[in-house]
Amino acid sequence: MQHRTHDFDRKGRIAAERETPMVSSSIRDTIGCLAKTFRERGRDSPFHVPNGVAGGEPLHPRIKDLLKGFASQDRPTSKQKAIPPDFLRDMIKLASLGPVEHRHMANLIIGAYFFAMRACEFCATEKPGKTKKLIMKNVTFRDRDNRIVGHNDHNLREKAEVVTICFEIQKNGTRMEKRSQKRTGLSDLCPVLAWASVISRVIEDFSGEGNPDDRPVCSYLAEGIRCEVTSTQVLKFLQATCELYEGEIRYGISPEEIGTRSIRSGAAMALAVQGGHSDREIMVLGRWKSTAFLQYIRPQVIEWSASMSKKMITVPKFLDLGGQESTATTQRNKKS
Image (cartoon, rainbow, N blue to C red; front, side, top):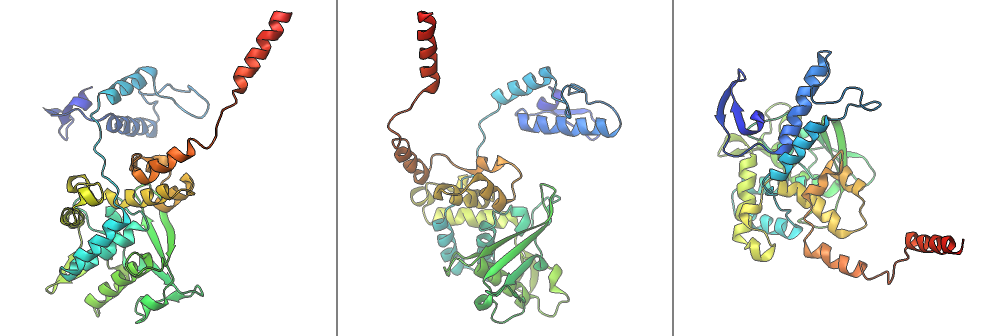
């Protein structure tokens, strides 16, 4: 209860009361971390029932009820809305009117969209976590005969048919995970062309400066100064696009509802509304280890709900087998 309502200093003493209580999910994560620490030191978790079930330790019923109570008091979460392909097209138009770093940023965002990336994977963040942002050697191109096309190839954009991204270290702990995407046939929304532009620009900006393989893909030169695209820049650019192109009318999204997660949620959303894509396929694309991707999907989009109404009238009637069996049993009992 104190952890939910107070902040603590480094020595574990209460520092101040929180303006808003900590959400239940954070409390649950804290319980898990503390329980792990107890077990690593050869002691039972104080929050779990030891040997409660085979192969596991369930939460103590009182702790479970407490977390359930916390969840019922949590404020509704404000989720960042998914951006659609038309938004990305408008973003490209805006980038073409600005400095070169805007075009580099637009290519990074489009490339990230096709791989459902987290912001920390393709740009610099204020507080880097354990996720490693992509560097040049993490991006590989292949031609139609599956031969590797080098980054320095002058015809990279014409030769490359497939781009493969290697995620060395991820938030979920998985290492060296690879995903590939092919050309879409479009000049604006294509993962291969987007990443080819990113790679070519970095090589051009930093030619002759040692081995380029270890340079972050978000690197660029601005008036001779070495810079990296940041998550803050990406956020402002996305919000500027939404505001300039009247996002509330065009996409049903206001600038305040957009965040860097909107790129990742847009990828999940794009597959979900198309139909024919299983949960497993979406999980593979975004490297989700569970159905956590469902929180990125907006259930009230017109493109999705409109198809539901047609499906709901396809079957004219339902056969209640349980009801028939129950009626037949009752009749037999009366005869007996």
